[in-house]
Image (tube, rainbow, N blue to C red):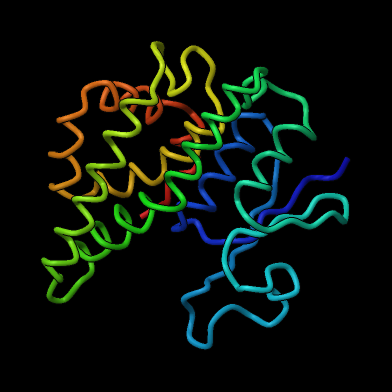
Length: 208
């Protein structure tokens, strides 16, 4: 099989999620830069790969995908390497629940409403940050409740849930508020120390 191609930007947490899955499976891949924030938006050719112009998109042996969850599940199931999904139905259900929690609630609150607003807002919108922190606290509380005993969110097995959460938490922790809030959830803080030490996390860190 040929090397898969991932389209996106190294600043994107969702591109990083897909890259971490590829790294954890030990798969060589090509990253084709696509800057959706460039003047004029994403290039026209990219809209053939993602009709909504978001990142990432993926191609492997002529098979195209968009949406990060679909990409990471394909990567796990189509390639050799350590499994990244639980074998049991309940474990997979909790994994998908965590992914959905991040996509529906935590991502916008942690990344855009807190981190981007605090780091790039000029001046930052304090009301928006405060609202984001309230949702972030609820998300972290939910993760702490769902976390099973062991190193990873679902226990002893590293799964797509861990890879989906890590880049979002990593962006959130660029802020003082994020670092302070995480300390209120020791089990998630301990998990963070482990996931952020993974080679896949270091390999996908955006270069300054």
